Structures are given as structure tokens and as C-alpha cells.
Image (cartoon, rainbow, N blue to C red):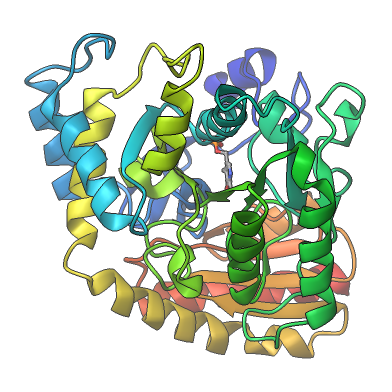
Length: 426
Ligand SMILES: *Cc1c(COP(=O)(O)O)cnc(C)c1O
């Protein structure tokens, strides 16, 4: 085995993995465009956009240049008492791009932290107004909001990876998963469930927290945007804040720049991350409305006591601005539509495979759901032997490719997914 892999196995903890690892990871030496090049020379299409972030592909000349240019000025300065153009421009860009009404931006160092900050904002808002009983969150099942403790408490309590922590996490209010299907008609009985749950718990609820339109790591499920309108209406009526976690759905992935646009609603608090920096550096942000900021500043403690060491990191902010710049001409919309067509066509044969429960596509997201858990070793071997890198989970083989993926490469990805579905259900 490669000496580096030997050291990796001995010392390096990987995501959601045991220590020491039981399955050695693949050693990547370079990445360019949509391709990863492994140490043994193998090339794989990055059908995951490296966990949904690398929307413009790897080593993009514009992003590389932005990073080099910023490194030539300053790589980091503390954000307490100091500020700088990359962060100011980024905050302004995010205010411009997100739904109207979100005016204030808290820069964070990862998606989980941005959800922590969102929840802290909501809790502190009610505390500042003297409504000290409003300390719980309501969410629907099947969600995923990150791996730190408060975000874990609003992840799916059973299907997710965090069932172990029952008893340690704050106990939130859960309603059933939204009925599946972006285009499925609104289920009035589910609307009633949402409305009743918010009404019933309004006195103790700080906020409703959901991923709009697509539930990502909780199961890659899509729902009708009308349920978001229902949540907006009922939370407003009952003095509960509404948080949208757009960390996975932001920056065009679902066919709208933000998934909230499908519903045409503005939540009180909004999280972005993942594709924010085009997948170059770790950065996320929490936005809120003036109402939330004003409420917090009227409290006995008028500040938001949060301040990561690397808050507003200039390198990350500069590359985020460059990535947003690449999206500014709107051509991402045609690219995502093209990918949606290619995934719909390419994955259609999977629906004929016995053992495939569902095939679904929305924007640049393609999902094949099996009737059994994926055998990861078999799946990875089948996919990589066809030149494709995907990371299935649970019963799902899915892709979220970079927007620059060519039709020919999309065909390779979908063919590999169909082949994998066949092998896994044979
Ligand atoms: C990935 C993700 C997070 C967590 O982001 P990290 O950067 O991994 O901490 C939170 N919410 C959603 C919807 C995500 O997809």
C-alpha cells in the first residue's frame, strides 16, 4: 500500500468513520474541472461536487486568480474591531441575492456553525423580548442541519446519524416528513398537521427550522414548495420565527438561485454554506431580518455573543465573491436545466430495475432510491470502475454534479448509477 495511505489509516479520522478506518479512502493527487486524479493515475468524475460545493469545477481559473490576488494582500485578519473589503462585498452580495427582507449577515466558518448561529439568534430574540418560555424548535422529520450539538437536535431523530444522542440533545418538536414530490399536489391533511403543531406549541416555540424544497443528507427528498408558504403563514400568525437552511440548496442547485424562491417567501433567518465559496474554502453565513436583529439588540445583553476566530476570513470571502461573480450572468440557470434534462433521461432506465423504489430529479440533483441499504464496497467498485466518484448513503445512489459537467460526462455518471443500481439489487 502507498505509504501515505498507511499513515492515513493509522492517524487520520475521516467523516462518519471508525478509527482506525476499515475501508481505506482513495488518495487524490489533483483535481481539475470535474475530474479527480488519483495517485495511481485513475481519473474519476466528481459527481458529488465534493459534497455539493464545487459548483464551478475544480481549479477554476477565475477562482484561483481571486485566491492568489487576495493572498497577495492579506490572508487573514481578526474580525473583531477590524473589517475589510472582501467581507463587506460578500455580505452585500448575500443581501442582494437572498430573498428580500434579509438585511444582516453573520459570517461563519461552516454550515453547522451557521445553523448554531441561526438557532442562537432565534433563542436570543425571544429572550431579549422577555418571552423566556420560547426555547424549542419545531421541524419536520427527515431533515439534516449539521453535526454540532444544537443542529443535531433538529436533524431527523431516527433515520439520521444522531439517534445515539437522544437524552443529551435538547428535545425539539417533530412533525412527520413532508409528503414527497416537488410537483405532487398539496396534501391538505399534512397542511393541517403543520398548522396544528405550530398552534399547539406556539408558546414554547422559538422557531420552525427546515430545509426548503430539498431535504438533503436526511434522505434526498423533495417536497411541494407550498408547504413553505404554509409554514410562513402559520409562524407569522403565531409569533414563531422561521429559519430556512439553504446550505445544500443555495446557489442554483434546485433550479432557483435559492430554494425559497420556489415558494416566494422570506424567512426570518437564512443559512448558506457549501457552494458559497465554489467549494474552495470553508465558509458559511447566517442572514436575518432587521426585526430579528432589533429584537436581539433590545435585550439586557444586546449583543450576539458569537465570534469565530476565522470569522470573515478574507481568502474565503474573496473566493466566495468570485464564485458569486461567475453565477451573476445567470448562465447557471441554463446549465442546471441542461443537467436536469440529462439526469432525467439518463436515470430513466433505473426505474425499470427491480429493487429500485424511486428515481427522482430536481435541478442538478439526481437520486436513485433502492429497496435496500447500499453495499458501499460494491457500489464504490462499480462506480469507480466506470470512472465515476459518488458517495451513496443509506438506500440512496445520487449525484449532485458541478454545473460545468458536460453532457458526455453526465451520461457516464448516469450510466454508472444505473449499472450500480442493477449490481446492488441483483
Ligand atoms: C451540509 C449541511 C449542513 C452542515 O454544513 P457543514 O459545513 O458540513 O457543517 C447543514 N445543513 C445542511 C442542509 C447541509 O446540507
